[in-house]
Amino acid sequence: MQKRQILTILVALVASVALWIYVVTVVNPEDTIEVSGIPVTFLGQDAIREDYGLIISAGQDATVRLRISGKRTELRQLNASNITVTVDMSNVRRARTYNANYNITYPANVNTGEISITERYPGTIAYTVERLEKKQVEVIGVFEGTPAEGYTVGTMSFDHDIIEVSGTEEDIAPISHALVTLSRTNLQNTVTELLDYQLINTDGTETSLDEVSTDVTQIEVTLPVSKLKQVPLHVGLLSGGGATDANAFVTIEPATITISGDASVVDGFNYCDLGNVDLSEVEDVGTFEFPIIIPNNSKNVSGEETATVTVELRGLSTKKIRVGSVEFIGESENLSTESLTSQLLVTLRGPAETVDQVNSNNIRAVADLTNYNQPGTYEVPVTIYVDGFPDVGVLEEKTISVRLTDADVASAQNPEENESGEDPSSAESG
Image (cartoon, rainbow, N blue to C red; front, side, top):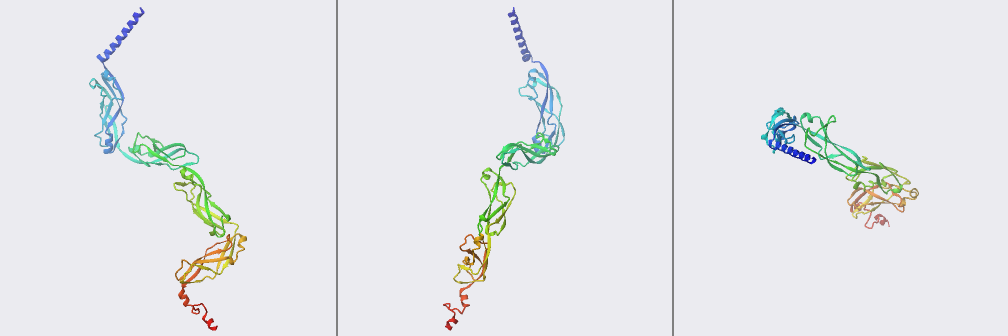
């Protein structure tokens, strides 16, 4: 009895399914559906933008609701995503508000002869066209993050410093700049990255990129990262005038500077060499200005462009000695030499106990005439030698006045001398 009931139920179920399939596929009754939210596509926007400088400012987000009747098998294939509603803008030539008819297109597999539209809303599409305006705005970058310890970040640069924004006057007028943000932490190397950006208005709000057009979709950002290093300043000392580096007390202001640059450059730069100070040019205290020169491709973060070097000499004594004669070397055989300077006052410097021992017999003045081969009067440099006292030097440079005359003329001007050099008068008296 129970088996017979189950069999009866199964037969009834099969019959119901068969009947439903028959009704749907053979009988295929009429039905009505409503499809809403169908987006409107505006054809020819690019053409009116390029040819007439016009854009849609309102109405581009319009949608359509359709009531469609027809065979159920066809209606079941329709929805808001496969029904196309289009507005032809090919006849648009000027800025104003339009009310346009629209075309409806169905999927290719739908038999349009089996369906019909019984209601459409709205009946026409209202949209507004305005003149296209353009504006250039500056790109501004913001770094949100931190460099690694001992490193510093430089000024951000972009592949586009200016971008062009297009849209209605109302949309683009408030835009102040394009903002690009780079977020990184613990940076040790320069960063280059392609980033999105925001359009920021003068009041700090943001204009959506969906509301306007731009000529750049992304901006390439470069953020230089440099290593910091503090380096001391250094000056060389040239011994002279009886002074050596052992007598010199040196101060440099500033004593150090901070530089930044690529690690390969900065790591090998251990001190900044200013140059040399000749101690013969320093009496007791001397002050010198030097330019601060750093390696190429690095930056002086401290900002000082010059350094002041003060040299104070200690443990030295000075003494003045008169020198009565000068030795000439390199004299021309065709010229006669006459010194117009009778004596030189020489200032000596060296350790006190040594300077006290020096006298005029230890001083030798030498004038080199190698480069003087024409008659005339010249100021000739004199080299002073302190024989026997290597620790004693001469402070200032000396010159003497020398008159050079033709040897034959000089001989003619001294008739009292004969060829042997004897005085004729003395010979006669003998």
